[in-house]
Image 1 (tube, rainbow, N blue to C red):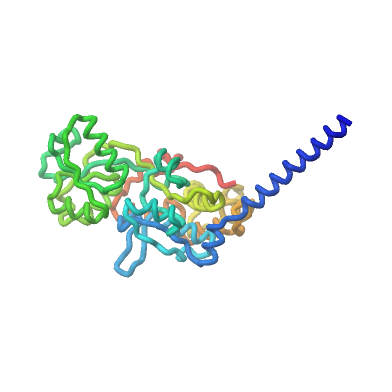
Image 2 (image 1 turned 60 degrees about the vertical axis):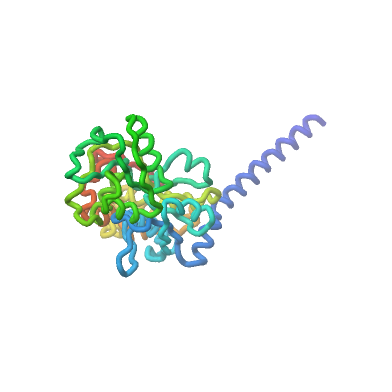
Length: 346
């Protein structure tokens, strides 16, 4: 009798494991966000209120930038058309609440990945699309050529509710320098205040300083100081609770980065289907089943590359060719001296 009970217990346990595995496998292929996005026919993407090179709209309302391209990649993957994106401009203060309250489904807005943000506010960072660091911009005639030249009473303009504000506080406190913070919710308000002389220095991510500098009345009268005071890994964010959607956004970005590494571009992607390299064939949908694992078709990644381009194409188009940051620095591929590196698409 004891042996029979033991056998029955083992059988029940085995079926429980199989049931759990089957249930988890089925659940892994379902995504409420994906279903709703396909039903609406567009990706809801939160972006900045205007940061050249990252997310910026022209007079006709056309959005461009490396952050914009992340959302366009997601649209190409899940809807078949990179143009099917609804962009929502958000201030730094608004951005996380807009995502948590279901106003948007992807936040791609030069947002720094930190432990607190990742762990405490119900959001998940899915990767890094730009490695940055905080710096300071000053007027050339200020006599300041280094952060070590800042004196007590210095006034600094920055955005409210950002890691930039916290880093600025830590920096000046560590130096024992009394300073006056001049904060604004909107980025353009910060730029206008600095341009009008309301503060001695303007601090944000160095990429942001380079981008916002071109908006100043006389850009050549200003210089970004050489020092970098923080690490700012910037990347897209999604809500917690939808693992499949999280994977879709993560791998949409990863495909762009890995495509550059293997030399797959918007121009040659179709021809790469006959490549002898299995990694390349997986990128262009010629083999593998990653699409099915994400609830997508076989050519989801091919569409990203063809319609948006690889990471290098996006960087060149939006940042290098616009003169913002011609030198990619840490955002160069790991094979070329940078730190840009993603898991293999397999």
